[in-house]
Length: 261
Image 1 (cartoon, rainbow, N blue to C red):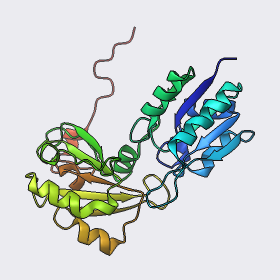
Image 2: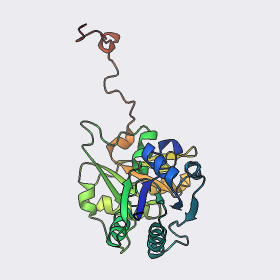
Image 3: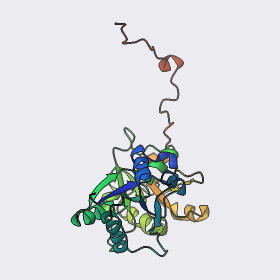
Image 4: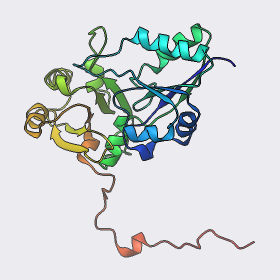
């Protein structure tokens, strides 16, 4: 049997957001290496598998990446069906790309399975459309935490004209605010801070760029949380730009354009 590892996205937390392909991989798994942010309810799909926690959390003791690599390789070479289960999507700030590359360099077949990332899920569940015609023409996803401490191109982010979604930014709110202001972003730019995206205890705090650090402190915002920065953060997916529309404007002829064969 050829060595194979599935790199699977478990989604943002809500087990109902797990994809069908992820469920299939879990049902076939002999070994599941699980991240900290994966909801335990997801593991109901792999009752017979060996579960190995290999989490990484800021400020907490983390499993070394080299050790995770060796575990995946060892079990795969022993003919086990290995699932590396990651919160969100494995290739959005999840090291899925580097793990896939390392495994392939060591002769292991890899299959990547998408998951819904927290930035998308959190915004949607707060009725925030990340793109909106005439308001936001795109989305930029960034992380405030970089391995080498290098800085982002804040001026480009501030003036990009897209909705900005920032992961792992709770501890760096002051820096984010100052850098975006210095880059030319409006001081009153709307901000939504979303904690525990998609979970029953999800919370959101609406603010603006200038006040977000103060408001987050009063709100007692905690990780994991994402920041949505842009004009859409002040809107709702249910927003109607023409509130004076008449009933006639809203009527639909369900037979229009339909011809019986």
